[in-house]
Image (tube, rainbow, N blue to C red):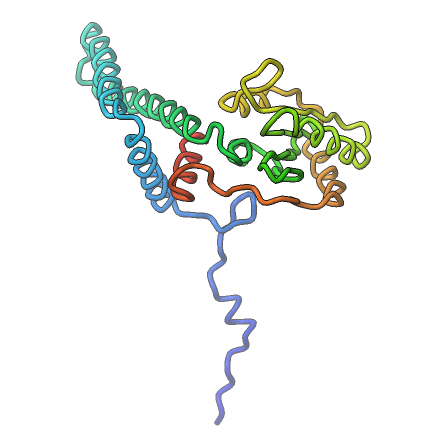
Length: 255
């Protein structure tokens, strides 16, 4: 007597369901996530220490000093054993904060003045920012980048002011025809008066007023798709060392 083969539907039904996160991507296990983060921090430390010889000593001093101060408080309260884990926790947190700031400073020093530096900063910002790099540019590698977010549309120009101001004005007219009354902000990256220094670019954009809701940003994004994507190549990974350096420093800045 012939046996019937199980249907493909029953096989699919018996397969374990893959858990998804809020963005619809497969969830990553906690241990795997911790391992990935640890490798990123190790990579960032190695790369930062090459350009910052004082880093190991600063981290050691921070760890010992903060841990000692917290443990001293425990001794004064006659709870030295209770305060040992608390001291270690505060010491680690303080060390990570110092490390993050030193890594960020090292990264900015390396990219400042290089083509594509502003795009690198924009693409590393935390939050829902839709960045389109190189929407306009010149053969001298001046560039205008477009950012869509809760404040509205932000146009960021990097390069020689005499060349990029005209590019910025032209791009502003193109965008205005699509988005109507939505606020448009234009930023020129640089150290002169009226410009925004590269290390302050991310903070400057984060402080802009929130004029749109999340739904309005999504709707505006669909309308802005008519403008197309990048029109010029932006140097990828302006940091010396290429992609590896760019990823590690960006991970540290997001923490």
